[in-house]
Amino acid sequence: MFRGIDLETRVYLACGNTDLRKSIDGLAALVQASFQLDPFAPCLYVFCNRQRDKLKILYWEHNGFWLLYRRLEKGRFEWPEASSDKTILISRRELNWLLDGLSLAQQKAHPKVGVRAVI
Image (tube, rainbow, N blue to C red; front, top):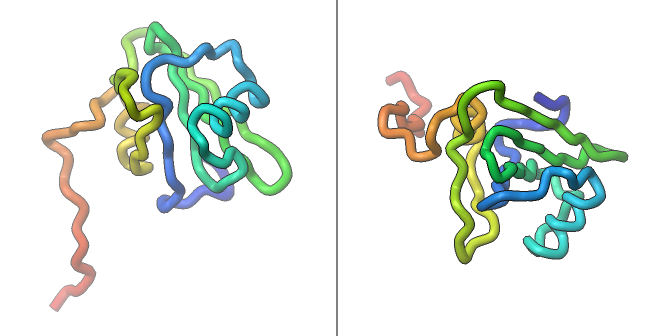
């Protein structure tokens, strides 16, 4: 997706809906003021609209922000509702599920294997 992002990059979802009329400055201010997170940290910040058919992803790289926008022509994203937690931390794998239209609580996904030895 990006040049400087590896699989260990943290991904924060903004629970509930976000006004996607906000652009880079508005989303970065939301990350800092409302979520008490650093918008310049090497993390992905993901926001969804009320209809659950549009996403924006904010990411800082070296000397500027990336802002990605995705719009579904059909269907909706399986997005977490607003709760006491304003954000949730997910893995890149879970982000890929979400972008593919799947739930974050996949029952059929293969679990991550931690063992790296053949013998």
